[in-house]
Structures are given as structure tokens and as C-alpha cells.
Length: 385
View 1 (cartoon, helix red, strand yellow):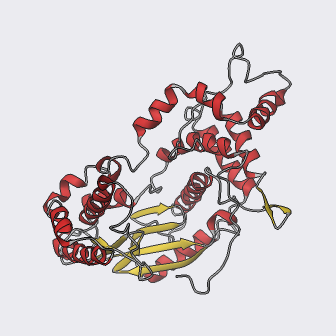
View 2: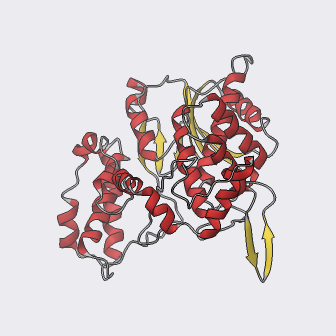
């Protein structure tokens, strides 16, 4: 828990006129992820990297945390960053000018009401819109590339032998000493006035996302790091109670899914067994019977770890996650979905952008060729947006 507890402005964007536009732009911007090697999409990706890499015994681990990242990203600088990427990788986004103009409209129209008054966020990226985490990831990746280039001319500045970042949380491995790391942090903080690393840890073990990463006995023999499950002290483990109205397969899959995650996140079997036993006791406190739990717990063994690491959690738990297949099905009928679900206000907004160069185009007129390929990418539960 952060001490002291602080607040930050969060403008909700889940039911705003620009929400469909934000989803639309985010879908295209995400294609830039492949151009950077520092962006981490989940902890499973990091686990697979640590499984296959070996490190020098003189290296140390570190984590960093950026202060209030979203609200400290300058909007104009973020838009400039995307323009530079579009010019550098012209094959990534079709109709890039339209995407950039739409992004600018989204970022500069963050309105909210409170106590009968209207407010607009005038600095930073709004946290409550779909494109925010994607844009933040790309923006930070660009800053990391700048620092990496600077390492080539500054002999005192060392780039980590491994660095991965999940939005505002970073993990890395560096060869050197504490002064080398602190110099790296200082140089990072100098790139932009508002982007600062305000918390960091370094040593032989660190906590990152849901992982505890450390130098075990094997590290000093082969250079391989060990990992185990990290759980915060504040976690109350309020799992679905036994008497919940959920269907049986949902209960079963949630328990099996969590056990499989423990296997993937534990290089050592004793670590898995320790977490597994805690999980059993916590489920008992939620009303589950021993016979039911033992039957499920016997199905997941640490010996299956190599197999589980090749299969994503989305594939292992049926029906709980949005899948690529669902996205493809939606895209096949995207134009029809677009015309059925997007509001008239959004149509008008896009027409204004399309017609900004003096042309007259109506996106409701099927005789006109659309400037952009319409792709609708996300459905959550039964709600369209």
C-alpha cells in the first residue's frame, strides 16, 4: 500500500462519445509493439524469457516504478511520438493521418462532470480511455530507445543486459554496481521533465508483478534465475465463495486456472507446493469442501510445467477470456457492426475529420469508398462498448 495515500484524476471513458474511437485507434497503435523489445504484455512472457536466458553472476536485479505515468505524459509530445513512428514505419498503419487526427481528438477532449459542473483535463493522458495504456507503452518505449542510443556515446551510462516494462513498472538485470544503476535512473529522469522514476529496488531478489524473482542455488551454477509466486500482504483472498451462484464449470476452471498459474510461476517444486497449500486453506475458509478440493488439486502437478509454459492462460481456461478467434469473427462483419453500434455523434465527428481537407465524404453513404478499414475489435460480456 502506498504511503502516504495519494489521489489522481481518473476520467472514466467507458461510455463516452469517443470510446469507440479510442478502441479503434488503440487497435492500430498496438501494431507498433513489435517494433520495441522492452514492452511486456504479461508476466508469462517474462517467465518464458527467464527460462531460456542465463546471466553473469556479477549481475543484479532491479525494478522501477514511474510516478503517476498517465497523467504526466505530455499530450503534444505523445502525438509527436506517434507521428515519428508512422513516418519511420509507414507500412504498419494504413490511413495513418486519419488515425493521428482521431487520436488527437480523443486526447484533447477529456471531459467529465462532478457535482453539476463540467471539467476538462488539461495536462496528461486521460487514464479512463481504452487507448491510454497502449499509448503509454509506446511513448515509454520511445524514451527507452533514446536512452539506449545515449549509452553509445556516454561510457559511464550502461544499458541493462535485460529490460522489460509493463506500462509503468519495469524489471531489469544489469551488470555493474549501485552507482551505475543510479546513474541510469538519473539519465532516464532527465529525458522528460514530467516523467520520473520515483521508486526503485535492486539486489539479488525483487518483486515484480505477480512474481518473486531471485538468485537461487542454480543461479551460481548455471546463471538461471528462480521465480516463485508473489502475493501482497494486503491481499484478502476474497475468492468466489462455495455458495456462489456461479456454474460449476466456472468454479472448477477458476481453481484449476489459479493452480496452473502457480505452476508456471514456480521454478522450484517446493515453492509451488507452499503456495498450493496456502491456496487450499484459503479456499476452505471460503466454504469449499475438502473432498471437492482434493479432487481438483490432484489434477495439477509441477511436473507439467514445461507443457504449461507453452500454452497461454487464455487457451487453458475456457470462456473466461476474449480470444483472437472472437476478434476475427467480429472483424469479418466489421462494417455492419460499425454502422449498427456507433453513435450518430461519432459518425459526425469522423466525417468532420475526413472532410477537413475540403472534400465531401459521408461514411453513411455506401457509394463512397471509406478512407479507413473499419475494424471493431472488442466485446466485453453482452455490452457492445
